[in-house]
Image (cartoon, rainbow, N blue to C red; front, side):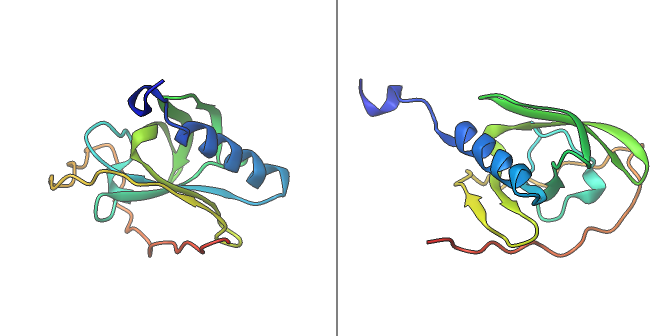
Amino acid sequence: MNSTAVPSNKPYLVRALYQWCVDYGFTPYLAVFVTEQVQVPMDYVNNQEIVLNIGPDACQALQMDNEWITFKARFAGVPRDIMVPITQVMAIYAKENGQGMSFPVERQNTPEPTRTADTPAIPSKGKPSLKIVK
């Protein structure tokens, strides 16, 4: 088997780190590079990035397969369907201690996707930081 035929281990690592966070009572956060493929409320996107709380208390119907992460969540009280291709996941980490893993994502020099009229205007917060775990 040549290296181009080997499937990505990224979806498996994302699922494993999610489970680790949940098992130990941490809040799993997902950092996503937003392109036109990503379905999220655009008012929460800053510099083509968004951080999503994917903990059991924050979202419903979470599905993580080898291609997509999908779930339902409320933003400012408004229910949303969230769809993130695994290829756009930049990191998954625990909010409480920053432990997790980052992944390479091909950044395109495309303009930030436009906001939809049904998305409430709420300023985005500062970027999270990741801690290197050795």
